[in-house]
Image (cartoon, rainbow, N blue to C red):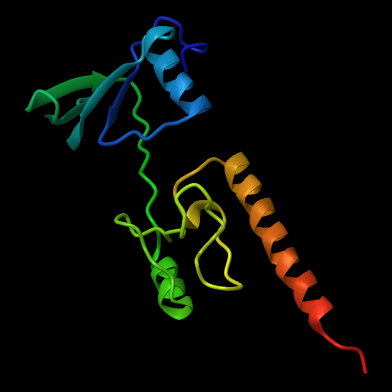
Length: 158
């Protein structure tokens, strides 16, 4: 947005931002290098004034009301697991974390569900980028391949 409209004022009103790795750097760069204004808060109402959009809400850091006029408004929602995640947890005996995502046995080894033959990958564990989901999918596929190779070696030919 900054490249297309260099003189624009850009705001991000957010409730929660979770970044790490490369995304952490992009987050800080967006504030420092590109002058993006971040407001931790909740949007309560949006009105069309005839020329602009009036956003009313609450700044949850300073615990006060906010009113900002915008030419353009982009709405985005956070990611949360669907009912299918809870159903999979029940069927396979998997644990859920405090946010309702599937909980790996070890926090840094996402593919390890703790249930034999069940491997986790991608956004069923946590919100993540497509690249991260692909990497985790590859790791889970390799673990599944190991199980299949071991089981085929244990069979005795007739």
